[in-house]
Amino acid sequence: GVQMLSGNYERKDMDFGDRITPVFDFSVGKWFVPTLGARLQISGLKLNGITNNVNNIHSNGKVYAVDGKQYWEQEIDQFNVHADALLNISNWIGNYRPDRFYEFVPFAGFGFTRSYNANRYDFMFVGGLINKMRLANWLDLNVEFRGNLYKSDFDLDPGNYKAIGAVTAGLSFNLGK
Image (cartoon, rainbow, N blue to C red; front, side, top):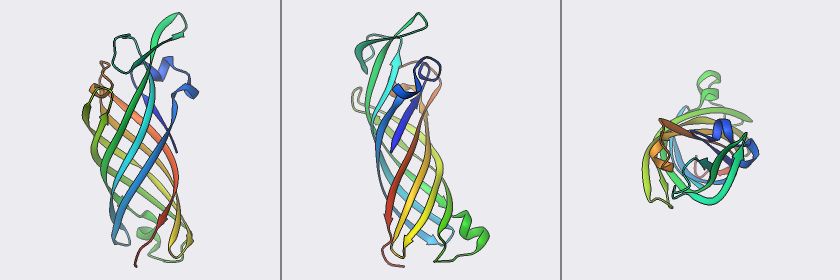
């Protein structure tokens, strides 16, 4: 999928297309009942951003100029690990049906994110939505929209909180019942 950093300067001073980077997810989960489940996910790769500090460890030294303002590009190698609670709204409202094609599954969780460049760890909150489409008894297509919220220490730019937004698509293999 793709992800995007939304920090102090990126939201207003960085072109939308320059902020988009690839992201890879790997998840393992379990449905305890048809409506409630949990998963552990590892996600990440690289984030693009900008900083007003040329000495920021994430800066690649390239100048990024916008409306007469000068910033420096950031490349942040990162990953995050989080545990999420899953709520299958389709099964809750419409009762469990193993042959249902589409399921609406919001989730929320917490974990940590790590920046390789600065060797920084930060606590984060996670929330999002899984659009689950049944392709076979053992195979689902998932399109996920996710947001991660964390402290600004992660990218070494001052500020309150920052976010990573992601959209991914992938396959789920169902083992057992």
